Amino acid sequence: MLLSATITHRGKRTMTPPTRLRALLAEPGFVVMPAVWDGLSAKLAFAAGFKTAFLSGSCVAAARLGGPDLDLISFAEMFDSFNMVRGAAPDALILADGDHGYGNAMNVQRTVRAYGRAGAAAILIEDKITPRALTAAGKPCLPREEMRMKMRAAVEAAKDSGILIMARTDSRPTQGIDEAVARIEMYVEEGADILFLDSPKDEDEIRRAVAAAAGRPSFAVLSPGAARETPTNARAEALGLKIGTYPTGLLSPAAAGLKAGLAALVAGKAQADSALPHAEFRTTMGYGDYDAVAQRFTLPG
Image 1: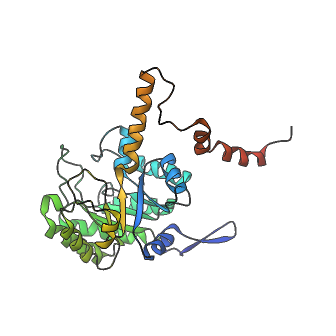
Image 2: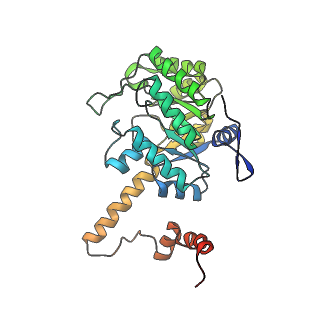
């Protein structure tokens, strides 16, 4: 049974995260969704004015494993990262990376329900084969009809919480654009809310994917550097895309900052020139916020 679009908390009725995300996606304009991986990245993204964020598997893999996203991260690790993000930025609308659902259709249902109960606004489910072949190249995908069953299971499980399902196909590099478009059309038939063509070659392929989405929002990865079309925000909107995320947008500068800090220590300095001033660092970390709340629970004297 689909839960109400509102929840009651301390006597106040508020819209659920999925309902709020639906409303946001119904507004005009392109939605920039920063990719986050922990409490600090989520807190800073929300403070910067972003209403939504993408809990990116590649970013979580980098933070937890210190390496690339090659399907080594588990459901438990991703879900723990989601809880960190949700705790640090409770008002942010989080699209959780559910990868391939961590198994068959029944695993997909468990994954979707867990994120829905935990307060995710949406979850990504993709068609890659798991376990992954022992190579960093290519992303072999499930047969189309087998993926249909996984998507059907996801949409059914989403009814419990109202969480939005984002359906991703990785079939473009290995099976071509015609197969990828056919999968997007299939996802629409099965009731997916948001559609995602990974690795489009050019703008024409983006247009085909957007058309196949049949009016439902289309998502894109827009970080530069990979073998895919990466339009600007304005161009993405003109092509019909609704949401853009940037997996390296925060992660790469964070890695650069860590390298700068380590280089400063090697050089005998206390910190890098790019480090935040001490007062700004303490404000960013929330020391003042902590003290303000703690005062209410401090005994006199």
